[in-house]
Length: 283
View (cartoon, rainbow, N blue to C red):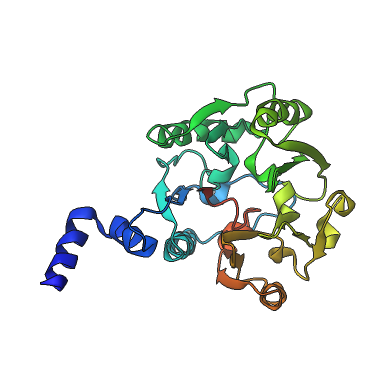
């Protein structure tokens, strides 16, 4: 009878909600962690390149890698929501560049690349049924989400070819009332700031030193041994998502007490992408 009741509850509530109820233990539903993702465009291979030479991109393999990336998020408790496809925009899979979420505030962003400015329309639609207040950074200000690194209550913002001074200033105006400080960081060696550095859950900033313009700006900086190892996504306080192209960095992070989930994103790395820019994590 108990088994029948459990099965019926699972059907009526939906599998994911039922799992959250059981996981909560005390009868309270845990806050849902949402990751916005967007399926790769059929024109992915035509994406913008700034610091890399163009190489052939295997579209079928890219689709498979994207599916495995999404699965890695879901297996660690993230509920994924697909942003409407934008097939006319080759770089649209890099959804992080179109929006920044600070607590309960979503900031729609305007890219410094003309070809990417149409990407945010679908992102705005995806936010409509979410309990977020929405604001925006608009021309002449430009900013890519890949240039914004959140470490505690500090937002490090890369001054790059995609993010201009007006964009940094406008973000500072939005972020200050929300309790965030904004620190500008020069970026000349890579496409985005998060192509140089990201942060561990404890606030330590990690980066591959030959790519980092200004490592001394960060209070706690840890060099990693591979360029592909600079980007991590904190799946939870103890678990990091990392490119499988950085095995020595994975070993380093495991030695610091983290579980590491490695995913192959080789086709996206050919286009200056990394694990951070393939999703927007909320919650």
